[in-house]
Length: 350
Image (cartoon, rainbow, N blue to C red; front, side, top):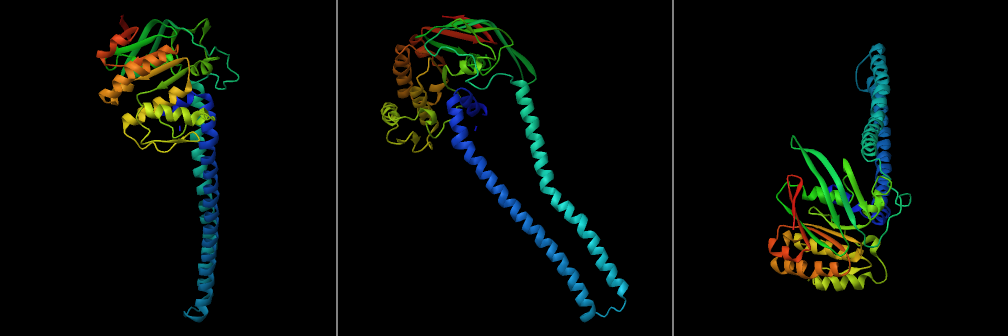
């Protein structure tokens, strides 16, 4: 599934979706891989057996041919050929038999090393049931002197220190040039990046490795490099198809896409249409926080206006905290606040 970049992030932000993706997508794929691996090894065993049979057939041919076809009177020559072939067959068979085992061992060691690095770099709790509980109702997020650093293109970039407060029912726009730290700020906000210092609070709860997984479940996000699943996964219930159809009509996609048992009929759409389909998914999630990273960038003027004047207003009216990364300055008046970033720092809040 599931990353890169986006697809990995979507799974991390939805624990139940990750479990369903594991059971319905990765599980069957792993079983299919197992079947193919068994089939491949079966073919290899038959091939090895056939190779041995061919070699013994060659020995038989030599013995028969020297007495019936070729004039060879010296038995020591025949014996030399036969002994050479018999000595060769052992090492050759060992080498051939060891090739699959060596290949599998190499792949396994690489996977173990990768897993070890991931666990060392991400020591957080990954089981939501074991994580500290957090409220799922509309809450306030506070950044207190939060700093995040990363190395990019041979230079160090520092985001922060950030002091910020996001309240329920608030619509916030984040603006700034390329490389100003907008996307990094959003990834910090939703718990996908870990701050180097400072505190992130959800109401009175300090976000740490113990509750970060539960904290992520507060957010519905559409990333700029989003991943669109071909089904609604954990959102499936007896009313979801009806709700989805209603949103498809609003987003002008009902003539291209239908929903049956929580699965989309197609995702082979333009980038703008795919983003609208992703918007439908986050609408149905109904979480306290909504984050949109340049959602309107691939939309025509009609849908830009619908997004800024209707969709965002509806989310705000439902008490959601909405954060939008945007460059569409003609709609800045719709926001409660506009936060401008420059070189990793908050330049101004209007």
